[in-house]
Image (cartoon, rainbow, N blue to C red; front, side, top):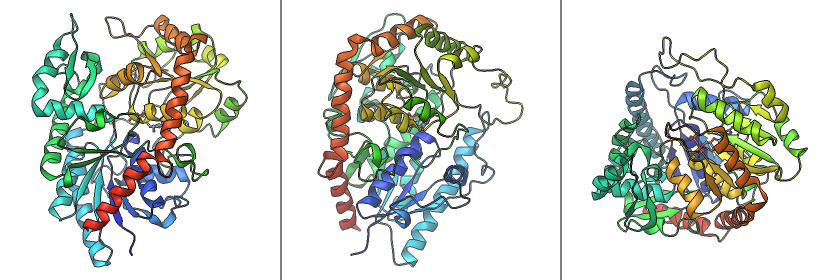
Length: 485
Ligand code: UDP
């Protein structure tokens, strides 16, 4: 029988590409072929990472099972620049991306190798529609926790008022419960886009469009989720109208199912460091669980004031650290929001570099799995959170926006593998608070956190190994899609 053929489309952000590409690798490893569709700008950067233009090196050992179909976005083939017109960019991605889906579906039919399923990630509500109009079943790959999916679903299905009410209580915080979930949510625990006062609340309508589409178009109401049954038993069942399928954690094989020890990186770094592997050599020279790893993902920029507090906190804690400070992104000319270009993000760099190491980017999974790492100071992006859980590394949860507050709550209260920082009334996390959290997570009293770390690491690996929950879930999903087509 022919190998089933999938098309996977992702938004061109690091936190979207990483799990989508791991998903493609997982499909390939169980006998499917995958066409991976991204804008040309992201593809070029991915290709740069593997040292070959324009075709990235084959993704061993699945080589020809995964092919890339980059599409050009008019005017944005060098990527979207900070301060640019986001609305125009999004509409061009939509127009060019839809055309690409149409072309690929047609060529699949012409070659006698039609696609059986279209899988797409967040912020592409139009993509599922485009596939459905062409008669191709589409399924969303949700790249945040199932709990966050539930909260959005409930918001758009009758619970918006309750959630808005909780969000509005700034002076006298209250907590709310939501059906199917046993956690109590306060303002900081809910996705920040739901807060009318949040600077990014304009993103909420995109989620609304996405959830509308799910209820109209979704094939047999299935949603693939980058989580695993053991981690979110309750949340995966909280929405009875939909079938949430845990297929994660979507991380490279060397750190998950261990079937391919050479598969150590996501293979798609949008950012690149010039440090080579110096930081890994440095980590290798450090004793077990002594280094603090600090990274806030691929998008978030803290204010200069917050960066200074983090620097002071690390210095006052006084133990070695590896801190990822990304280089400044490209911006459009005359961007008024971006007047700090010539400033150093931290003023005491020299002093910091006597104690630890600062890099512009690193291979995060390799870092987290290094024995020297004692804790991860993280913004709680979902990939970072899952990667830390799957590596058994306790966290200092330092969230800012989007799903990060919910993830921080889960880290601290549900999975008990970390401590969440408390900002002051000006939303600043002060250096003493950072030091307090580091002492808690790295200190002798952290036995429980470490025990839980080991537990989650074993469960995460177990889920993706042959016969584990995510492995079984994915295989039965693929069999089902193959049968339908
Ligand atoms: N990442 C990395 N090196 C770094 C920083 C981040 O490889 O120096 C990866 C990290 O492993 C994760 C992704 O970038 O897979 C960031 O995704 P996440 O959801 O944590 O945060 P986002 O960037 O979307 O805010």
